[in-house]
Length: 277
Image (cartoon, rainbow, N blue to C red; front, side, top):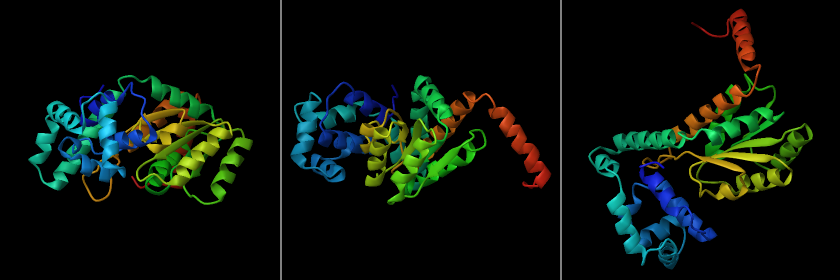
């Protein structure tokens, strides 16, 4: 498991049966992993949108006497990255935070089995619906753009509304067996509802989210986490974007004609003068 703040928190939470409220607190703590050792129970409750007693009960559920004991444990175990961040301005801190997120992702990928399984599921689905709304729409669109060069039928679902379920139904009727979802904070209720609908329709849901405790986890068959940066006014998503490219690679490895499709595209692009060299 990663030695990053987020990785240590994930390890701390593993093996505990958490209530929905406690999962919400855990989700918040993973998102703000570098800050949590220095937050009061009231501040953490406010960030998670729960009551202060809920934070205390959460600490007890993890085996601590209370929240002060949990915070003391986190302060003692937090790696040097927190001290390093304090020595830089806010823009540098944001970049260093993303470097830490990428390091965490690299350590997670030491076990390639989940990504390889995802690659098989995505390659086998014809068509392949790719879902991402609001903040995650750019991640979904980027994946769909490149996936369309090697996969014969990729369907981008980046707009919500009453047609979303219809488009999932259409994909299922056309033969889809899996759906890839990019889910980033803040999580739209539509995404959670769409994943529940997709699973009820028989699709296997593969999700990229910022933590295993994200609201979409309960409606995902395979969730691979990639942390987002929270140091700026708007979240940064370098790790989810890179994980999307890793999934592309794993999917292409499962498509026997992927290389031929890429070569065909290059020939046609050259004939059309599509790119300026």
